[in-house]
Length: 300
Image 1 (cartoon, rainbow, N blue to C red):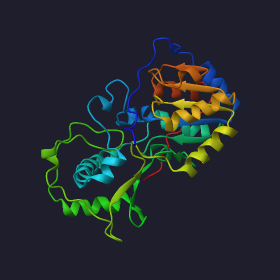
Image 2 (tube, one colour; image 1 turned 180 degrees about the vertical axis):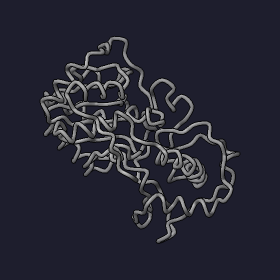
Image 3 (cartoon, rainbow, N blue to C red; image 1 turned 120 degrees about the vertical axis):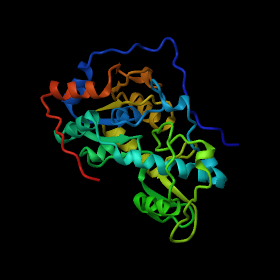
Image 4 (cartoon, rainbow, N blue to C red; image 1 turned 90 degrees about the horizontal axis):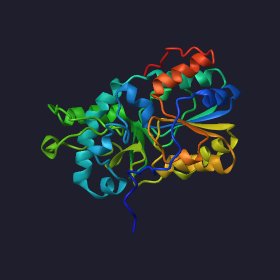
């Protein structure tokens, strides 16, 4: 029997305390070969809330699971209504100082790669190349029957046409692009089938309870194996999809450094956890290393 996915984690009282000293992180970046792993916390300053930080969305919202999505037409209607509304907010989000700093580190040859648990595309919009999207991207849609991929904007247009006048006011937006709507607000929202075969469409993201594709995991493991150090930015590391890379690095003797305001599930494996806001911390690091965090963004 498949268990429900782990959504929360309670820190032990004896976890190592956080610090405000950016020195070890600056030293690692200065040495180069840093693999960056980012979570929802790096996008909060762009207006996209995280799951578990202060005011995190899990306090009011249970994310859609793969089992619920594939097993219930009603769940799919609820998901697509909420996601259709949330997509508009994601489309307006712009990279923040944290995303720009990561892109600047890469431009100056300090990084060996970037892995993100986020599905918002903001690293790429800030100018980062070769980003591994561990959990996929909301920009794409896949048919569960024929496997056809298509742009999300194309589905958004079809949903707009099929649901003219659908303009509910959401109570909030979540990191997975899911808006908070009541069942009454969802109403009889019309879900669009695959234009190719009529099958079920799903965003090309890894839902809770769904496995990350094995080739993607192995690619990330290879990146961890080649890195001089692993820098985690804005992730609680609650779910195993990211935590496994921290544990892999620690077991290999590769230094792990974390910048996250709250304790994380990987703190015991880390050389340090810097408990500072990401935007300010990463901007301070670019200044300390003499790197201009250029403002240039890519148009979507």
